[in-house]
Length: 312
Image (tube, rainbow, N blue to C red; front, side, top):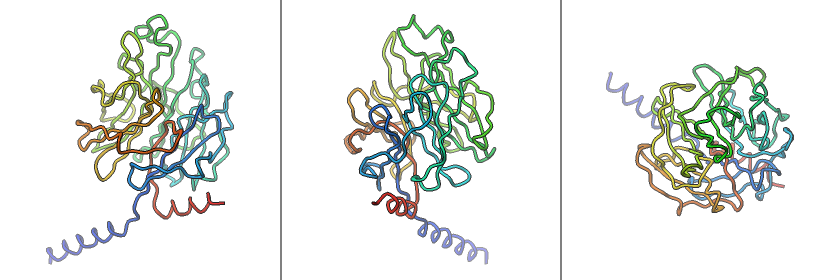
């Protein structure tokens, strides 16, 4: 009887897996300086990407002094909606936020002044979102330079900005925790993105050091905790002069896409163990003019509805 029950359970598990809708890979990105707004692309294999809406913007920016929409980060929240944050300008004290049920129709845009309390804050760059199922809350995290802080890596202005990663938490995008420091390991750091993998929080980040020796590459840090205790970073997993890492798990392993911004092209690396990385740049194709953003997944039925809504 026990053996029969196990066979029934196994069959049922296989059946559910076979019936599950296949994932469609989505990529949110900006073009030029982010002045025209949100762009979306899709891929069936995570390698060949096609722009939606004829590569025209889906949503125009409406908040911030500069009214830009750079570095758009989209995740699916605990409520099933898509939540997006973005860089609203080069020298803003806050970030942009909006939500959507279908990636086409978005809520009224909101400006979240996450660094307004800090008079010496120079910018608020590349915000990202993480939804924590245990606490039912979102963590928003980003890079900021605070003038006068961390002078050991300022080098009398040779590094231009001198960032560290900060965060707030929220359950409703109406009230927020105090801003706290998330990551400081003694170097200029931007473009963090976090995934929970095998019970561990994995942060992909950019070492933004320009002086005394340029780095500008992607590294990995780990922690057992979402909001603190991240490790010293690994050695670089990419070449130099790249930015905007975004990660997704595929059938062939984890893929990290990044913007080779000095060459006006995208690159990618892949790994099955998060230790050994293979460059797969020659396997990927992105729409013309793509700048960095975020990769995420939707179901096939969601994708079909999306295509219908974007078809004239």
